[in-house]
Length: 394
Image 1: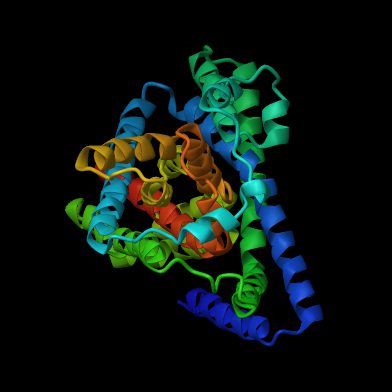
Image 2: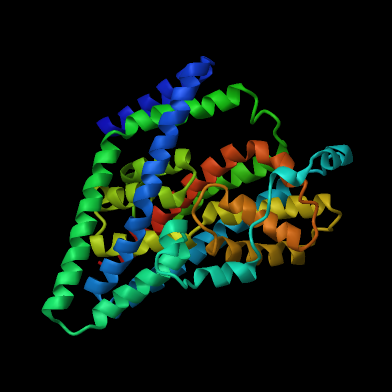
């Protein structure tokens, strides 16, 4: 409780400092926020690799089948639910078209799509064991971790195997010690993140909203966060308030870093030491969820795609909405848990069908807020999937 109050206090102090509008103070807060983001990104990659590798190596590939099955089922169910809520809200709120001059005056030159999905799939297959670490390619790293972990689990028991596994476990213990130290200083980071955001708001960066579209996106995230996911927990006999209370450090960290991958160290530490999830479950489920469980991203892709296509003259029939619901879920599952990952993925999809991507240039100034909320929802969903899987397998 004391830690939660400290975090909330840091949030308030940071917001006040940002609203003061002092240039040098804003520069200091930007610097501190950048330092914390970089430190968590530094720890995120080895956390993912070591967690998956040691889990497979010590728990065995046979035992992970049930865990992975539960994780995948809950991921798909919650992601479909998030997209469905977004689709329903879009139909009910019915955002109108933007003025033609607003679309034509917005140049998409300052935003660029990612590579094609064909190239994206090829990039998952590593041809260099060092390159995925340097680029932070999470899917490639997961593939390597799976292969090494399964390979270690299949090796006959020997002194060589024992040395390798103990070495990996020792590195993981050291990593978690560093993570706990970083979390201990995190209130300072929260002050900086909060000040950074409030300074942007007061400067008018997010003032040019698109009304009903923003209402649909943020409303869908709020419904998924406070209603749908708690219902999933209640259905499995878990107390949503208890789970959220224990995972609040990870949710708040996600809110400010806008990266579920960078938040992973905090998510794992909170799940194991605060919520009481078994280590073999937390260290297997959460790295996978960070990569494939993207509730907020699925809703954003669907709602934004519908909005862009509608402004491009596409008639939104029930069949069209259902088709894009499926596309958004599949796309979100393969999206990277990094800042603006959903934005560029949506841009790629819209470019592929010839939709007016200039509209995304209008959305861009307010995407900071959207990205924060949907990342917090993603991490909350990861936490729920982890808690439900741990509960089911006890």
